[in-house]
Amino acid sequence: MNEAINLPPMAREVFDQHPELWESYKRLGTAVSSAGPLELRERRLVHLAMAIAIGSEGATHSHARRAIEEGCTVDQLEHVALLGITTLGWPQAIRGLSWIRDTTQADAG
Image 1 (cartoon, one colour):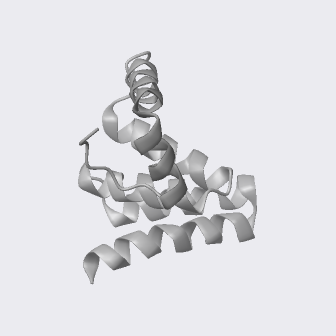
Image 2 (spheres, rainbow, N blue to C red):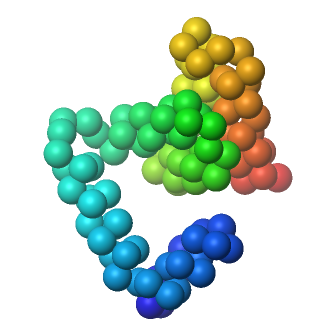
């Protein structure tokens, strides 16, 4: 499989060894994206919020990076994290904010 994607080392190893799993995963992603009325930007922000909520640094980095590539602003991404304060609690929301800034400040630098 020649598709260029940025994955953590272990995920990349599975991707390389089992490309059929990645293809199935991509098809599922396409299917769920088209299953409802949300626009691309809205879907990306929801994915970002869920990544923060489950405490996944890697997914937060990935969705923040992709959101910026898809036209979201840094302020929008940071707002997603701040909205988590009342639902997730201060520590989890601020941790998510720091993960977003890992990505947005790295891209700016």
